[in-house]
Image 1 (cartoon, rainbow, N blue to C red):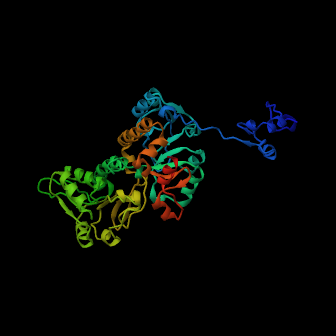
Image 2 (image 1 turned 90 degrees about the vertical axis):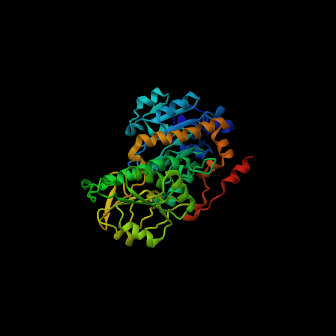
Length: 434
């Protein structure tokens, strides 16, 4: 008996008895549609297309899909980074149009040595997928066992079903927010925070104008007119660069944080004495009442940012004032904050303009893409030096810190507690492989 006689296979003549007697051929890689049920009756199974890992001598196979959510305009790797990776023997496939929104056309990627893929599916044949926004449900369907995927987590919209879908795919998922450097800093968070801090002040200045229904005032004032007051919550990187930008425009700056070390570091880095304070509700309420701009820049290493400004405090601000909640990435630190988008970035509440866009750096997509690409390229080159990405995970505690799913197993304790999903310490997996 053969499969042609059974009517299940065309242009494909195999002796089924011969297959059954040979254990090496008990798995057939490609079979026509409709033959699966017959094969299962005889104990056969189709075999998934093998994943091309390109890990020999540390070489990697990298896929860059086009972003399609959250009005994302950035791209994970720029042509200059691709050229460097290709020159080191790595293979890069880029989905067509991936860099267009930050002025990196397909031609610039082909000239750098990348392959341009018309279909997203071809990009997801790579061993390492690097993107910015979290993978969509359609992209999760394209993932394959043992793939490594880099993306943001986007905590405000994260759900248990999303994590479970990734876990079912048996992939290793790495979050940019949790990647650590050797000195304990968060390199990608830092570089994007520098951009976000500068951007927050520029956006606030724009929305104070009458064209945006603001109070119609200039941040720095002019001769004979005092400058506007800017209140910054958080003395981290975003807060520091926001203070730099606000002072550069001539504004009066107030910075609040409960971490005295951060406040002292900010004073030192600014090179001048400014008003700083712990987050004391009575003092904060007074300063917000007279502020033209309030910037939320509190980052939490564990999960959600603390909500330190009550709705009452917001209601006491002067009409037409502006709130820029950069912390909306982690839920926001103003009680009145609501998730917005680049298409509809603001809303009014108590006559206060709220700007609460999560991926604020996408507004400056080319600068953000260049900054982001520089950091992730260094990580990929380090993986080559280690011999493979798996070895880098074993040898780099900072890279392991970014992993929240390892081969289908949740490894992040915060996510485990938040969604009541069992997690396993990643170090246990690393120890078992030694």
